[in-house]
Length: 377
Image 1 (cartoon, rainbow, N blue to C red):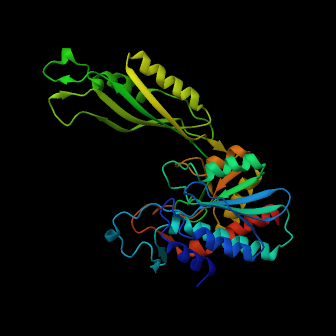
Image 2: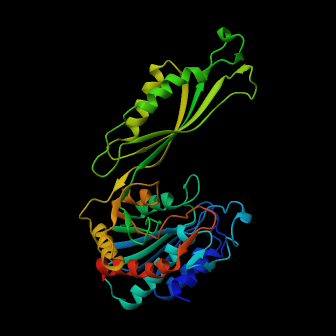
């Protein structure tokens, strides 16, 4: 059994549903300390964060990952126990195999190999892990660690995130940026009443409909060469008492913008509120900014290194994308860090029977090791 496969299996066996780390980080810390890493355990609230570094001075290259996983869903729907890793038909099955215990194991194995072979490497190399990437708020994970880094003056030049970025084969796509995510909980107030006497009531559904039409049709920006146009979506719309003879008094809508560097969150908020005002609604909205958009531009050292590694070791010219959802890279990038995401195929993440190809998993440490050599070797 290979080192990375063995370690991935050990991590999968730990039922680390967010934010419970279940000892994953302690296991990894012990391994890294054995090869000379300095380890800090940064616990905030119920969240475990691991910060391990080797070397000194600048520049600093950090590998970023998470040890938490999403819930399994119906266990009976899995072909095997989601927390008992099984190799079947050339794939390793288990919750977190692809997202992202396989990448975490590969990072650790690569770092062990790098500092063993290059004990006097230039600068610093590090591993940053959290148990709160899959949670709904991410308040005490990398977001909080980034605040800590600002306070103590921690400087990082480059970051490789192990999110499962590949589409069909290892290395065929890397993320060089991500869109921002701005959510809102909108309440539109009307006047409740009997459906037979609409003149004595005000239906918030009817009142909101024209505003929703305008919001959905609005062209928020044109995007740019690195990002598609900003997207507005309603993810939930709820009103009513459950009775078909009652006009509801309130409507609640959950909305989200996935926006590019062509827009700013404050402008999207202001334009949304102006549309609501223009339609004469009695409204209130609570905004939540999950993360600003970020981009590592062409020519950046880590972007060039990761692209070259995919070309040389995977035999592909990777697509360089800013698509998909969000990642913890959104908290590191504002520190002035160049961020790129490279990981296994994402076809089964969060699904029943999540898996990763064993061949890809066993190649992944060599990709991370090659990035270390190109930037610090």
